[in-house]
View 1: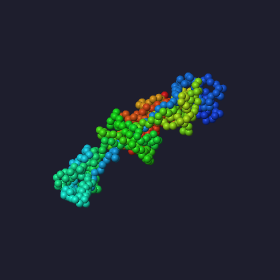
View 2: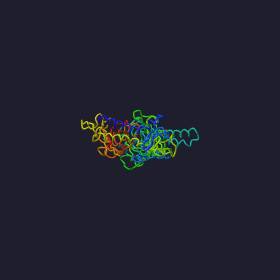
View 3: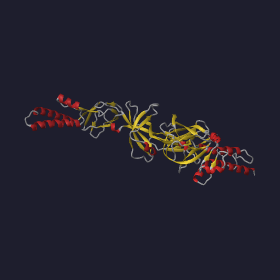
Length: 519
């Protein structure tokens, strides 16, 4: 009998406290539905003065649950797009060195990969029978011009000049420098081997030339790259692409140079997406006069998106049901009226308001007060656990009221999961997190057990409760593969943590964990 009474009391508590959290939703979906009076002292007779679905909260309760309000106002909206990238060569500043004729390398001047060369610097000397015969033809054309250049017959004079021009042009087309040609003119004799020079200043990134080897026109001998400017190829998700424009400035940071910021400019946006990762390549051009940015380095990129001044509200003020988005308008005297709004893009901590609000209207800065009923319900259940007639279940350390499921105790230590070739271990700064602000840590290691330091990690914290908006936090690399972020677990209970991991050239990883916040 006593057990039945206790269960009936608990049911009444559940219904009463649940109405506080959910009544506003019923009210706005049912225009004839009753309004909720949340502060003692207001009678139901005044319901005709209250808008459908509105919530009344007395000043005492407002102070108790910490209700904050804010204004919908026009403010500058700035968004930061953060992603990972890889440094690579500027393809417009790469030269491939071939010979235009068959021959043999007699002397090698640039004899190792990675050497810095200047434009016009000799790379090697080449002996070629074709080059020797062309030099002889050029010298004969010089003599013919000297002897026939004063001929009274115009055709003879023009013929000698055109022969000289033709042989000189052939030498130039075979990459013989003007200095070499002038030396042939001055000495009056052909050279056995001629020098092949670098077409640009840069680093030798590939070398296939060796002294004494025979070369043919289809043989690539050197690849030279000018690294004074490099490309930084970033992966941008499709939902962020609309904010990226050619010409935007970007900040580039690397873990190898802590505290140093490099600058870049968006030069190209890929017209297609990568199917597996749902990202598009965005190319940044970055000056690199000191050659600190090296191809194949991993980098972090931040692109600032300035949307100008727009009407905006804090993102935590919005309740998103999936079908519509609602804010609570402060009508004064403790009355809060739900209002549907249409929102635009989300910027750092704010939503752009397209319709539903006007500048200067006051709304709740956070709707977390509606969740207070859940915490009070848990307190009531805990208090009733000791009432007469409430039997305890003692199996495997779990304790609770008979017939009522209680939350399992929190298991200490990190939660570990294996995803693809990575091991993810989620933990908190204190072994058992509490309601309020906590430090959440994620350790990422590869299949060899080495810490992963090139990832971009984001957390989404959400309680499995209708009408509760999730909170998001970007993690920062702290040490040895640990990524940390501040988590605001607004109330005690079970929280679902969604971890998103992005790495350049890798498929995005999403994994879910659970945290139980204590009172």
